[in-house]
Image (cartoon, rainbow, N blue to C red; front, side):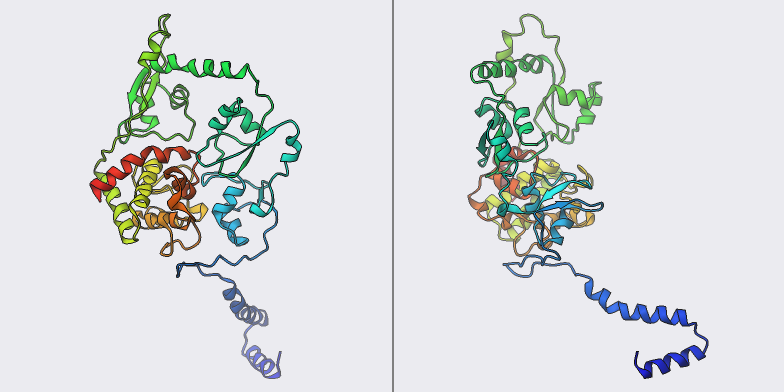
Length: 400
């Protein structure tokens, strides 16, 4: 401390100010600039070619989750994109992480075949291509979905992506498996066909349907082969009660088999208003018709094209964007105009680099309808977007 400062402090002490209090005040004043410099302001995308968030630490190959961590906060700490961390670890936007869990932060540079050499001897491998599902891969190699999931440490909510290497369990039977598979797929047909059916209407929920028919949500899921995160849509036919399966049932079963559910293009007033908003925002951003159609189909799959104030975990709004995954605050996620702009992304994305929109996906224009939407949403049910492609273009024509 310099001599003038000592003198001033001495005079202050003589006026009766406690020395301990003065020391506390001066320490606080001295610490303020350092603390203020450490506060980082939100990064906004101000140009067409944004810069990546500067990492506060070099990313390790493997990171152990700590209490309070989120995928978004981990990605920001090491200058990574949230979507990259999700993809490297086979997670979706709706996945939950927990303290003690280990996450790979190595990306493409760390060849993830670490577990593969152990399994390489007894098992074969399959490289995932765009559009494939675990069910299709299992069927192609004469094994079961459960065997593929177990061989790769996955569960039924896991997401696979193009280029991923999957180990194929050696338990597939060479000749016995093919005949057993059709027998098993034919078995549920008589039950589903003979049961009482309900055509899903706009606004229906599994809970409401179960209550209407005096059953439970768990029973509905089991009767229709759905998972706990399944989404229902208008026009879908749901079996709501199992049939007694009389003796002659096997003969009429093939004829009475229900056709694939029809997806209707008609929207109610609320859905039509949201479709018009999505189209308007897309036009303002200069989005081509195909990009707007992808946004419309995504909103239909995620929220039935309704600006929901609730969803799975903390998912909110038209596109069920998760604040905990860097998609903005809860208030921003239910702002339909803003959430639509965040879905499109690009240089005018109001969310900056915290998330990745459609225009941030390299080569999205040449991707299939489903793959383009999935690249943004990272859903556990990627095949559903493509089911609405025809209707999305119809909505664009009617409400655009």
